[in-house]
Length: 134
Image (cartoon, rainbow, N blue to C red; front, side):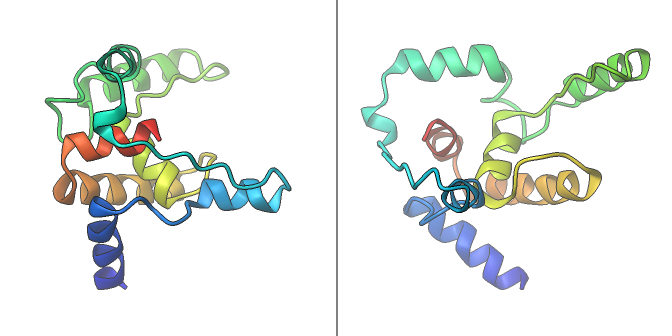
Protein backbone atom coordinates (compact mmCIF):
# COMPACT_ATOMS: atom_id res chain seq x y z
CA UNK A 1 0.00 0.00 0.00
CA UNK A 2 2.82 2.40 0.90
CA UNK A 3 4.54 1.74 -2.44
CA UNK A 4 1.31 2.49 -4.34
CA UNK A 5 0.81 5.75 -2.44
CA UNK A 6 4.44 6.71 -2.98
CA UNK A 7 4.17 6.04 -6.72
CA UNK A 8 0.92 8.03 -7.00
CA UNK A 9 2.41 10.98 -5.12
CA UNK A 10 5.57 10.76 -7.23
CA UNK A 11 3.55 10.69 -10.47
CA UNK A 12 1.48 13.69 -9.40
CA UNK A 13 4.70 15.65 -9.13
CA UNK A 14 4.82 15.53 -12.93
CA UNK A 15 1.16 15.23 -13.93
CA UNK A 16 -1.97 16.80 -12.48
CA UNK A 17 -4.02 14.44 -10.32
CA UNK A 18 -6.56 12.70 -12.59
CA UNK A 19 -9.31 13.37 -10.04
CA UNK A 20 -9.29 14.29 -6.38
CA UNK A 21 -11.64 13.03 -3.69
CA UNK A 22 -12.99 16.57 -3.38
CA UNK A 23 -13.80 16.60 -7.12
CA UNK A 24 -15.30 13.11 -6.91
CA UNK A 25 -17.63 14.20 -4.10
CA UNK A 26 -18.79 17.16 -6.22
CA UNK A 27 -19.54 14.79 -9.13
CA UNK A 28 -21.56 12.52 -6.82
CA UNK A 29 -23.48 15.58 -5.54
CA UNK A 30 -24.41 16.33 -9.14
CA UNK A 31 -22.25 19.43 -9.51
CA UNK A 32 -20.16 18.03 -12.36
CA UNK A 33 -16.42 18.01 -12.81
CA UNK A 34 -14.79 21.41 -13.18
CA UNK A 35 -11.11 21.22 -14.07
CA UNK A 36 -9.13 24.04 -15.60
CA UNK A 37 -5.54 23.36 -14.61
CA UNK A 38 -2.98 26.00 -15.44
CA UNK A 39 0.75 25.68 -15.04
CA UNK A 40 2.76 27.51 -12.40
CA UNK A 41 4.34 29.70 -15.09
CA UNK A 42 0.90 30.74 -16.40
CA UNK A 43 -0.08 32.00 -12.95
CA UNK A 44 0.62 35.62 -12.23
CA UNK A 45 3.13 36.41 -9.49
CA UNK A 46 0.58 38.50 -7.59
CA UNK A 47 -1.80 35.57 -7.01
CA UNK A 48 1.05 33.46 -5.64
CA UNK A 49 2.16 36.21 -3.28
CA UNK A 50 -1.41 37.08 -2.24
CA UNK A 51 -2.23 33.47 -1.34
CA UNK A 52 0.97 33.06 0.66
CA UNK A 53 0.37 36.38 2.43
CA UNK A 54 -3.20 35.43 3.34
CA UNK A 55 -2.88 31.70 3.97
CA UNK A 56 0.66 30.80 4.99
CA UNK A 57 3.37 33.44 5.22
CA UNK A 58 6.03 30.89 6.19
CA UNK A 59 5.25 28.56 3.27
CA UNK A 60 8.64 28.95 1.55
CA UNK A 61 10.50 28.15 4.77
CA UNK A 62 8.62 25.46 6.72
CA UNK A 63 8.56 21.71 6.21
CA UNK A 64 4.80 21.54 5.82
CA UNK A 65 3.81 22.46 9.36
CA UNK A 66 3.83 25.81 11.15
CA UNK A 67 4.43 24.70 14.74
CA UNK A 68 4.05 28.25 16.14
CA UNK A 69 0.66 28.64 14.43
CA UNK A 70 -0.44 25.20 15.65
CA UNK A 71 0.45 26.06 19.26
CA UNK A 72 -1.24 29.47 18.94
CA UNK A 73 -4.42 27.89 17.55
CA UNK A 74 -4.37 25.24 20.27
CA UNK A 75 -4.19 27.93 22.97
CA UNK A 76 -6.98 29.91 21.34
CA UNK A 77 -9.17 26.83 20.95
CA UNK A 78 -8.73 25.92 24.62
CA UNK A 79 -10.00 29.38 25.58
CA UNK A 80 -12.77 29.48 22.94
CA UNK A 81 -14.02 25.91 22.41
CA UNK A 82 -17.17 27.06 20.61
CA UNK A 83 -15.21 29.05 18.01
CA UNK A 84 -12.16 27.05 16.92
CA UNK A 85 -9.31 28.38 14.82
CA UNK A 86 -7.22 26.30 12.42
CA UNK A 87 -3.53 26.40 11.62
CA UNK A 88 -3.27 24.39 8.41
CA UNK A 89 -0.51 25.37 6.02
CA UNK A 90 -0.77 25.49 2.23
CA UNK A 91 0.98 22.11 2.19
CA UNK A 92 -1.56 20.60 4.60
CA UNK A 93 -4.49 22.03 2.65
CA UNK A 94 -3.02 20.67 -0.59
CA UNK A 95 -2.63 17.21 0.96
CA UNK A 96 -6.24 17.33 2.17
CA UNK A 97 -7.66 18.63 -1.11
CA UNK A 98 -5.79 16.18 -3.35
CA UNK A 99 -5.65 12.97 -1.33
CA UNK A 100 -8.38 13.19 1.34
CA UNK A 101 -11.96 14.25 1.95
CA UNK A 102 -13.22 17.53 3.36
CA UNK A 103 -14.26 17.68 6.99
CA UNK A 104 -12.61 17.22 10.31
CA UNK A 105 -11.76 14.57 12.80
CA UNK A 106 -8.57 13.21 14.25
CA UNK A 107 -8.36 10.29 11.82
CA UNK A 108 -8.47 12.54 8.74
CA UNK A 109 -6.06 14.97 10.39
CA UNK A 110 -3.63 12.11 11.02
CA UNK A 111 -3.79 11.11 7.37
CA UNK A 112 -3.32 14.76 6.42
CA UNK A 113 -0.08 14.84 8.43
CA UNK A 114 1.14 11.73 6.59
CA UNK A 115 0.29 13.06 3.12
CA UNK A 116 1.72 16.50 3.97
CA UNK A 117 5.00 14.86 4.96
CA UNK A 118 4.98 12.87 1.72
CA UNK A 119 4.36 15.82 -0.62
CA UNK A 120 6.86 17.98 1.26
CA UNK A 121 9.41 15.18 0.79
CA UNK A 122 8.65 14.37 -2.86
CA UNK A 123 7.27 17.55 -4.44
CA UNK A 124 8.87 20.97 -4.70
CA UNK A 125 7.34 24.04 -3.03
CA UNK A 126 6.58 25.30 -6.53
CA UNK A 127 4.57 22.13 -7.29
CA UNK A 128 2.73 22.29 -3.96
CA UNK A 129 1.68 25.90 -4.61
CA UNK A 130 0.72 25.15 -8.22
CA UNK A 131 -1.46 22.23 -7.13
CA UNK A 132 -2.99 24.25 -4.28
CA UNK A 133 -3.93 27.11 -6.62
CA UNK A 134 -5.46 24.72 -9.12
